[in-house]
Each structure stands twice: as C-alpha cells, then as structure tokens.
Length: 94
Image 1 (cartoon, rainbow, N blue to C red):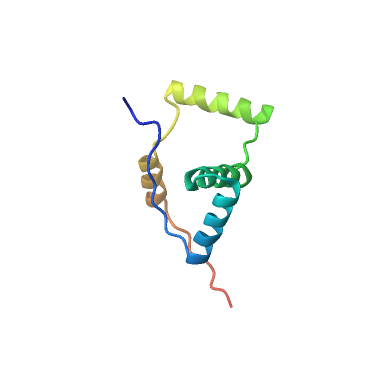
Image 2: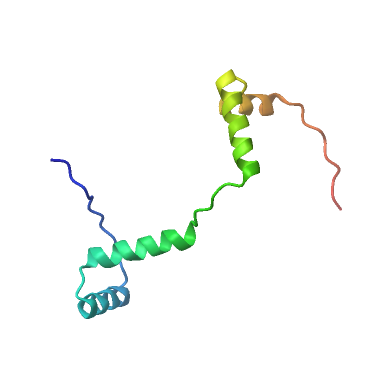
C-alpha cells in the first residue's frame, strides 16, 4: 500500500519550538497537525488563487492554439537568437 504522507524534518530555534510545544499541548494537537495548518495558512495568504480574466483566458487559448500549430520557439532557440543579435553601443553616462 502506498503512503499517503511524506516525512519532513525541519530545524527551529529553541524559542519557536517552545511556542510550538505550548500551543500543541494547549490545543491537544500533534506537531504535524500544527505544521500542516501553518503551511496551509501560509500558502493561502502568500499565493492567493485568482481566477483568470476573460482576456487572460483568450490569451491562453491563443497561445495553446499557436503551440498546437507549431508556432513557437524553444528557450534554447530564443537564447541563440538573442546571443546572435548585434549589440548597439551605448552612450557613456556622466
């Protein structure tokens, strides 16, 4: 049977570990429960999910259609093109 969780080892400063233990005991929870909740909260506030706008959805569809037609360049091709482009001399700043 496959595992449904993975183990993660983290390092915490002593004061943070003391606080974790205090909250854990007070709420009768495991460290894992608290850490999962903390990460869920962090992810939900740090990386908020937003639905794409209608314009963004149209742009995504156009991009997917272009890829399906083969109308794209690879990252390596783009890098080669940029590297081969002639460079213009810049004026010196004062």
